[in-house]
Image (tube, rainbow, N blue to C red; front, side, top):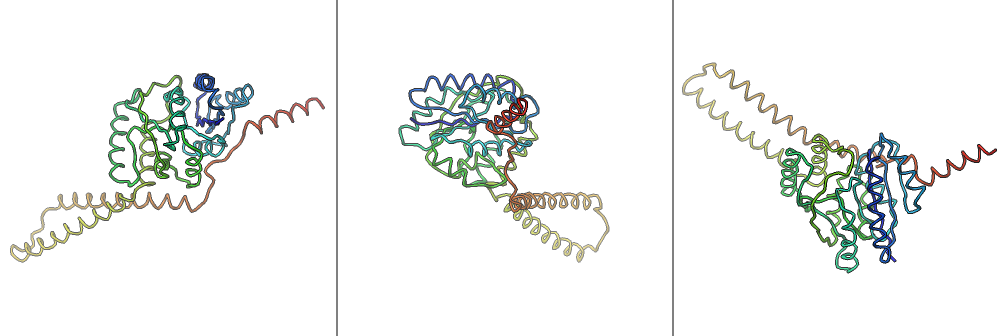
Length: 325
């Protein structure tokens, strides 16, 4: 019987976890004749009672495993840690807010069992619960990165997907510090079947993904999977060099014919500010790539684990033995 591992990154999901657990256990019960389940939760430095909730779940259900980070390392690191911890034949990544319906797992599992595909991924056909600006920004981002990157980026793609062990191992083989998992899933290839669904609203709590974080995430994706911005910076530089050469010829001709009157000071200042801004913009692009390279060369760990369900049980037992003595 195949084993399905459900990897769930958690950040301040104390209210969502009981509802999520109830939903996935229901699906596991419905699929008990076809597959066994394990639940791998990753506490990404939550500030609420998420860790205590995971301790309770692990105590009442031996299928529940968890990793608790020493601090907040980000969702990408949490997903990577969960994939490393997962031991199933098939592995899925899901959010704890139930925007991704667990009921789809039955359909995804049956598709993989046919053997034609290595991954069943989901994409949302709506942006329910998103603000107007977030919807607009997301649309622009996918249009932009789709033209910049050689790696296919599917608009509306979710992290919710069911993968074979072979594909998971391929993703884990890329241990880069700056991670954009959606791009990595696409980069490794493998045959993928896409399922569309209507995105639901969060069952509890509020999203931690604001526009600022969304913008930073977009920059991460572009820098990780495209060098087009560097080429663009070079093209802009060449263009302004060409314009400058033309203007120099115009000034020389004008001086020879009409002399050299001193005028145009305001326009000159505006031009200087404009060109200065272009230079800083291009320098910023180069700096972003250089910063990512700098971080990669440090070889820092992607995440640091402070507690697991096993270490918590051991610590608890030692405390109980000490009390008895």
